[in-house]
Length: 221
Image (cartoon, rainbow, N blue to C red; front, side, top):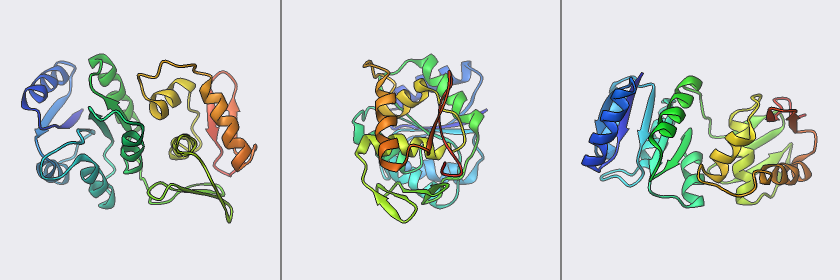
């Protein structure tokens, strides 16, 4: 698998490249956003590991530009920015996953393999699942013609389900993506927020798959 690593910290990038190559990846490196865009346009990658705080063009803009150009290469954002809204913005600009520094290298490799297994998937401006529509940039949601008011966390959960509409997502996957990999609270918080969403967008929309997780129905029901 061929991976593009984008980070302005030269020593860190050298170490990460060596580790990924030892794990079987072919690795190209860019140290600023402009070079990252050029490499991503000129080459075919299985995934991009992208920092946010980059010279010339930040990671958010790199990601958003690639998506605007309909480049759907899986992007894993790897950054020291660990705020809730940083993660929401990263995912909403089109990233597939978000991992904060410091991190476990085996976990990075596992999550990188996970996004490459899913492969390139189109991320349209509006995400639709049946009669549920989301506008990630504006943080707006509709069920049919009626707009639904959601909290930031509710929106992040619904957005994650909608990006994988029809797929069953485990509680662990939801926790890692919506709450962050380092979340150490009660995992039953997922059930609480699923209940909140069902109360707001309809109990028939989010399905529970016993022993497996949750799925947003593709037909809205």
